[in-house]
Length: 82
Image (cartoon, rainbow, N blue to C red; front, side, top):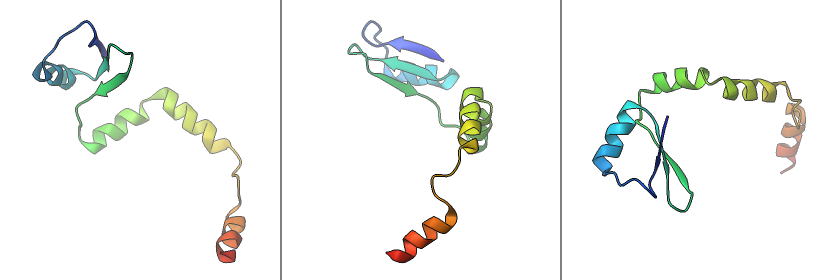
């Protein structure tokens, strides 16, 4: 991932899109806001990349171990009460 400081760099949209076609680009504005410019690929490719994101997978693994806030029976009872 490449970071471009737009406060100091002056690139055309065409050049930014060319860079984003090679790798994801983080754009940082002069006031410190950040944006990601990325090419949208095939959904299957995106799923593979997400699955390869170790920190995200670790987070999801931890979240899956948490006890549910409400049981399915509790939710059903609340829905019937309404």
